Image (cartoon, rainbow over all chains, first blue to last red; front, top):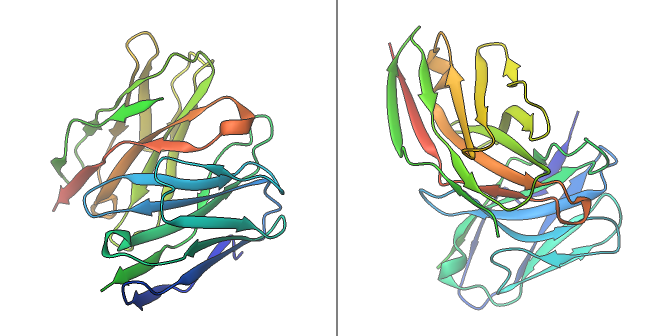
Length: 114
Length: 116
């Protein structure tokens, strides 16, 4: 079972460059999320999509944009990367119906901005 | 906004012994969910256990159990018969019951080291 798949796994960017992190889930989940994890900290929500066609800002949205391309895919774009965006990025998804609220995570994408 | 606090940055336990990780949270909501996630060195986020706030019975999953005190807004994780493979970061997390805003709010984590 693939679950939640993120690409790329590792990326080094120069300050000012742009890139897109791709995420896809094969569990027919309604909701998808992007989190970032900085050293020694818990995960913080960047953006989420409660259902196809909707997106909402989380705790730390500045410097990011997202696209819910379809039910399966949710991408995160850095338009002009900054060293403060060096982090591990996690995509996640959940069914989000009734009690089906468990969130499943991808394996993470390590991003370094130099 | 909800907050989740884990006051123990690091803990250590001997193999086969029991350890309890603490978590407190703050919310004005009555319907919500609480989770414990494990993050080993691989960084994979693994669900350990979940608790629905409307359930009085504490959740258990094999060697893992919780002590959910709703009035005190406390949600501790007990690991019995600790194993070397339990060495990891453990995150407590809160989720609202509102389906339109269901995202996890995480604590800062507790690093657990199981000693042989």
